[in-house]
Image (cartoon, rainbow, N blue to C red):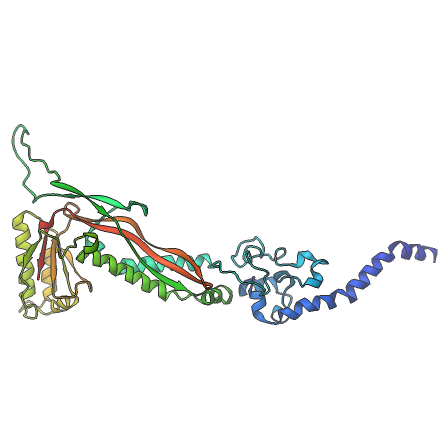
Length: 386
C-alpha cells in the first residue's frame, strides 16, 4: 500500500495529463475538423494521389487533416506545429518541403487566403512547351525550305544583310591570277522583330488539373502557336513595309512571269518549267522550291495527260527541292526559288517558346514568342508567277 501511495504521489501529474488528453483534446480538435468537411479543404495542400497515400488510415474526406490547415486561434498557442507550415510531407508542388512552399504568400491553407502565384506541375509545363514546339514545326512553311542562321539569342536586335550579284563561273587557268572573287555588293543592317502571341490559362483550370488530376486544356496555347507561325510566314513571304522589310513575293529585283490558268491540265507544269528555265539561264542551279496558294496546290492534283500520274508529281521531279502550299499566299500566285543559303536565309534571334507573362485577376497570361528576320541576299534567285 505504501508503494502504491509513493507511485501515485510521484506520477500523479502523468495521470492528470493522460486523462486530460483522453477527454479534453479530441473535443478541442473537433473544432478543427469541423472546418474540414469539404473535400476541397485537403486539396488546398495536397493532390488527390498524395491524400490517398498519406491518409490511408483515416477518412480525410469527412474529417480533414490537421497538418494541412491553419490552426484556429483558440488552439494556436497550444499547438503551433499543427499549422500548414510544419507537418505536411509534401506540398502541392511535389517537393518534400512541407506545405509551406505551396502556401507561401497566403494567410493559411484552409481557404483563408488565395495566392495568384502559379502552381503548375512540371509535367504540365513540359506538355505546354512540347505542344507549342510541335505545332509551330508543323505550321511553319518558310523554315521548311529556307536555311536558318542562328539562333543568335533573344537579346539580338539586328543582323547584317549582304547583297550579292548574279552567280558567275569559276575561273580555270594555269597561274590563278584572275580576280573573280565573290564579294558583297552592299551591306545593310536588318532589325530582328519579336513575333509573339499571348494566351490565358485560367487559375481555376490549373487548380483543377493540379488537385483533381484532370488533364490541363492547352487549346489556347496551341492556337497562339498557330498564330505565331502564320505571322512569321507572313513576314517571310510578304515582308513588313512599316519596318522596311521585303518578302519573297515583293522584293525588288526578282523575276516576274505571268501565271496562266492552272485549271487547264498541263498549264501549271509548263509555268513551273518556264520559271525553272529562267533561273537556270541566269546562273542559279537546282534544287528549286515551289510555293503556291492552297487553290493552285489543289489544281495540281489532276492526272497529267495520258501519263497516269498527277501533275504535281511531274512538278516535284522538275523542281527537286519540294512543293509547298501556304495559306499566307491569298491570291493566285506561285513562287519558284533557287534554294540555298547563298541566296536567302532566315536569321533567327530566338526560337519560339512559351514564356510566363504574369498573373492578372488570379488568372495567368503566357506568351508564345520568337524572333526572326528574312535575309534576301540575291533577289534574282526568285521568280514569282503572278
